Image (tube, rainbow, N blue to C red; front, top):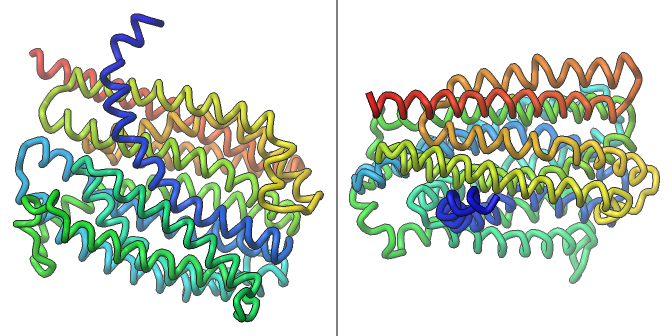
Length: 454
């Protein structure tokens, strides 16, 4: 173990230095949903919490599709920065901004005018649907500033500047919680808004975060040499295709994985508001650990892109394995926390004892899939960094929609295991993705090392 540690020590240090701020800023998106659930669960009741679960389970698919498209710029920035081609980085930012503005407007239209109509046809409780619709409007509007923020965030992280987005995310979440409590409960002379209050809080928070992040990029001296090639209207088809060639498969990867979890939430919603609210509690906890692993994965993608651009394939392999080691240790720890804390963790979100009982059982299952969830997202990050996105997209589709969801449907519906059965299916999907993506990573790195020595 000592020899292994000494071998990978430089990579652990470099990856963690880059990853820790990314992890904290990545948590921002999930903490918004968690804080919404906590505020609604304690101040608005179980039906409102179930409505938050329903909306978030649908919204998160569109949100992560948008985030996936915005991630297309990061490995390109990392590779061009590794080649010292600074002007190209500014040109990529120009085209990424245009892509993400158009994409965010399109997603707003699809989410609100398309998916809101869908809410009434999913066999959900009518009381839940009635509360969900106004929340869906506000949340769907917030996707526009959220993707603007993420465009600047991915640009800066691709260049290795990760702390600023982290700080903006931290303060943004503090603001979101404060506004959420004020609006939902009705403080300082404001009329109580119920579930709409967390929607307004999220929208205001994301608008301010986008403005601050944009101001930082354009005013900081750190980016002056990169912005020489920037022009908002300098749209170049070739560069747009470059970004979309990476971003679209990444978006599809997110859709296949998170879409499976969203489909699971809809399946669980057919069992009633209590299992649906319990699913929201447990998935919020699991999402926190996933987003932390996703932050490590984002750092792995950046480091892989740097080494790939420099044709340093041995460093690439060692850096990737170091990321695997880090995430395995982290997810083992969180699995232990879920097992030991399963009777108490749900109290953070709700005081409904029926919901807590079901959520505690789901957290035990969440502990089982922690390792698989962490290792599969590292595999995706490393492969994304070297530009391999098409095969991993196919792998995620097969893992979640051919393996995971059918098993969940069989166990949950046909064998009447309820929410637990659906979650066991998710475990199977994550396990399949984890193994296949690791095998893909080994194959790609060995191929490049062999080509370099031949």
